[in-house]
Length: 111
Length: 111
Image (cartoon, rainbow over all chains, first blue to last red; front, side, top):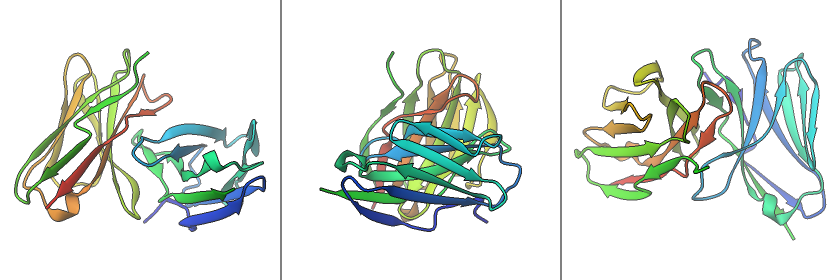
């Protein structure tokens, strides 16, 4: 049973427009969420996080929104740039101390 | 500060063989975790080591094992390789369940 779900395997947007990547979770005990970005042939790199006591966290072009009642979070990238093309993973810390990842969404930003 | 280093980066093995992958964490980091990434499955937690002890383990068969040395370097071993073990194996280090940093991964192909 997947505790963190990313239901869109891919997303394509035009350069300069907004990219919205979605993530749903089932475990209401999760109190912290992270987004990682992964380029081919590289390991994932931390992008942005949000604590469950907040509903929004912003870092430059990246904003994460958390809707606890819906168990849903989203990552907004504005404006999108071709260099943002990568796979984005949503994750939450599990009870064992590991990170529980979604399956990822491949973002393609077209010039 | 050097990042997480994994060796080898790429390798090809035959079914039934065994493989050992190595990970050098960021200096000062005592926690090392291993993840498996396969197409469409996201990143799945294998195990975590802290101070030479396995602290947590994911849902993988006993063919997957690991260890950590006194200098925090870690190895993971997969015995009796199967075709389905073909994947990207990622090592991640953290100070102690703090921010997690990933290596570039070891690409294993089993033929």
